[in-house]
Amino acid sequence: MENFTPRQSFVYLLGNTKPQAMAWVRGGREAPELSGLVKFYGTPYGGVLVEAEMFGLPNINMQNSSGFYAMHIHNGSSCQGNFSQIDGHFNPANQPHPEHAGDLLPLLGNQGYAWTAFYDKRFDIREIIGKFVIIHAHADDFTTQPSGNSGAMIACGEIRRE
Image 1 (tube, rainbow, N blue to C red):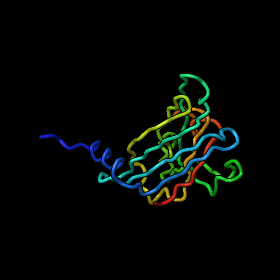
Image 2: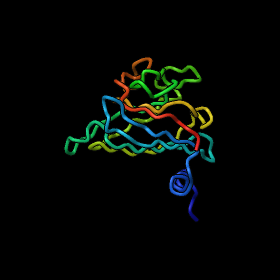
Image 3: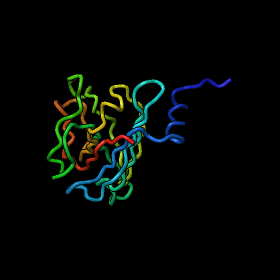
Image 4: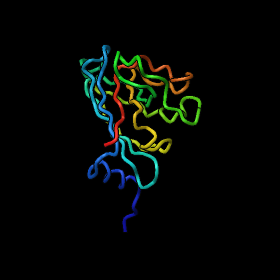
């Protein structure tokens, strides 16, 4: 008899269900070619399954390149104006960095492409509707306060209910 694990539920969710929320991410002036989709799925375990796929990350033209990019959920009001209306990390529990609910796993870009999926119990989908997924120019150092020294915001997308 095979033991059922959360992974099996997550694989099923990704392959057979619609996400409950999504953010279409678009690059700004520093990365105009960058675009992608971040999907958010509710799980039977509480928390959220996050799947992200990005194209056109800055290392796209460097053969065999790879690089890390921070991905966060931010507060704000709009992605307009090269993201000038984006505020700090989503942090409802007022925790230090990197314990903000909006501190997500980094993207590993391989010649401009990145795909990742992970499980996070620090927020639920209702809390993040209307917030923004931000991709930063550099990796998060998971130390520097208040936001990880991850560089400029290079892409933005509003999280919307599906």
